[in-house]
Length: 204
Image (tube, rainbow, N blue to C red):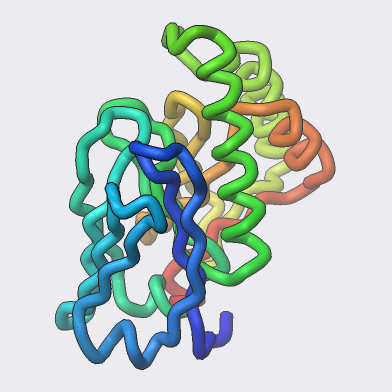
């Protein structure tokens, strides 16, 4: 992973329900706290660089609250895409990373939220139980071929099932990889994969 000169950040405004995606220069982000406001003026994403870490205050469309989340400075500056989730629902609420992955992740989140609204806001165990079952089945198949590993060198991992995603977690270094599991596109994405590589400490 190479360090980029800019970072893309995105979230969906809880008030107007529009996606807010902006490109920011990393030096400007590091120089002083940054506030990214929705054009409607009713929500904002705050970003602040701390020693060794970056702290974000993120508005959440699902629960209507603001979440205080953080990650290492290295991950913020180098990862292709970071996802931050609502602790209550497991639904993603913010993405940081490169242009393509951030736009793609935001589009998937929009689809997932549209599906939730189509169902009248009624929440089951998962956003879409059939999609989650298919994604978990694909993960099991890849695991049976020893196709899940971490860049730290470990093949030992565990997982956490969320409302609309699955997190793969390296048991050695603690690095995580998020697998979206909320829409039909998520099934198509993982069906194309024969291996899943968790980006661990070696790449940080």
